[in-house]
Image 1: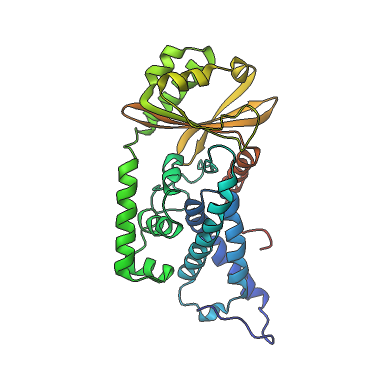
Image 2 (image 1 turned 90 degrees about the vertical axis):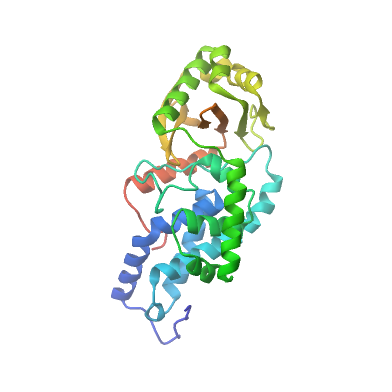
Length: 314
């Protein structure tokens, strides 16, 4: 299926134009697959750049299904990157959180449904092996059949069924039923209001008993390097630095299919805050302070707001 053109062959302008058209048509889906497997918009973009290069060099006349070829190539490359990323993240200082992505233009980010997109679930997916993650994503978010997934992963259909079943079980053991979008937004607004005014009692009332606060700063000064657990501790952390909430511009954003918060200081985005909530209240508070991850969010916003564009070099 992957056939290199001979040295005497050279693609015509119309051939390349068609190649670009096909790639752009499926690009959002490909990004959605890579992003869910990797939890990183920047790494997903790198994968798509490599997919484009391979698509450009392939004898496309021999490809029966372009979307199958592109999806398969994207998945396998994402698995490879995920395996190496796991080693790199061992040296990460403090909690690691997925890079948030803007979903104001596409709430499901190229998927058949918004499965495996919320930050809290992406964090749980990190506990699966890259192959398990990919199988789950292809099945649950993009509705690929088991035979299609088996072909992509070079596994038997029986093995794929077992892998997806194990992944579902693992996730069901850890995930909670989310509140609806209206309640999610209410809880986020209530959290911000109480944190800004230092209302510890109101904060504790918003939290689930086992609430955890995770701060992704990769060693930045002032970023908590360990998870903070429990209502009282998380409430105290959220109000411990009054200067954090002073003279800031707070903007609600659509991230990973949920309303989140971007904090601007001196006209520049300085922190991203997301929550995960169940009927018990907010059970996960996620602070992204890493400048590169905030930049990745802003980059995803401009990319999807203006329409899907091919990777650099296309």
